[in-house]
Image 1 (cartoon, rainbow, N blue to C red):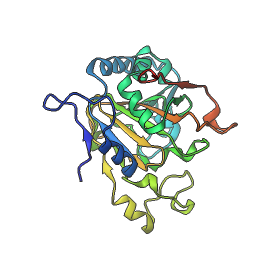
Image 2: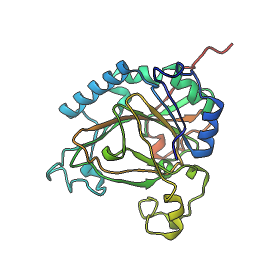
Image 3: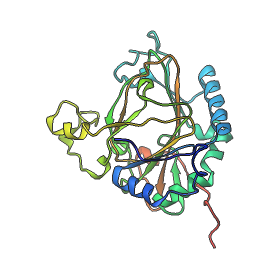
Image 4: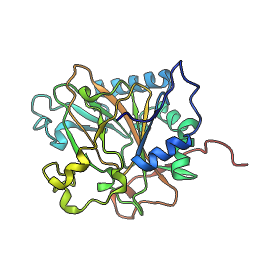
Length: 274
């Protein structure tokens, strides 16, 4: 089953400023949609440069693979590969290029279609550059992002921007279409709230899983309840992705939760209000 996406190549029309009706229908049905070429090459190149500098200099805040103890990760920061970075945290504050990305009308207008006006970006979740390195990258089990978040309603959208090509061999995301519409019982999850792969009742969902293949500049929009996972990077090149999360203005974080532990940003309107 191929993924329905918006193409932005020389053989297709110029990128639309908003989602089409078909794309909106796909998002509401499947819990995700891909927009090809949403970020141009110059923007991606600048983000890559910032990422390379952050990794080379270990500019904090950072999250190391060894910190999470996921399958395949080094046992500790002192072990071989223990300084392998999993995420450069607080991406928005690292360079103005991320502010420029978050203010792009072609991005904001799509978020407005999904979330209403104005769109709010929590700084407590995602707001990072995901890095998946050869040899020491880990596996991320099947999960919903909302599992550790605390908001009034489970209504948030994340945008995953590929800063290079992503495919199964280098650890691209896998996603289960329509999983955002289901209700998961606690018994279907393990102690860390990952979707269990050893239960027969979970297998029909897992059988629907599809890889998300992206090229540099492509953006994946996905619902916070959409179940997804990622494997290890089996290639010789590092994979980079910039990820940010957004919410409707009337869906604030619950007081006292990690979701409320940092400030939030209101995105500029994609077009003036008449």
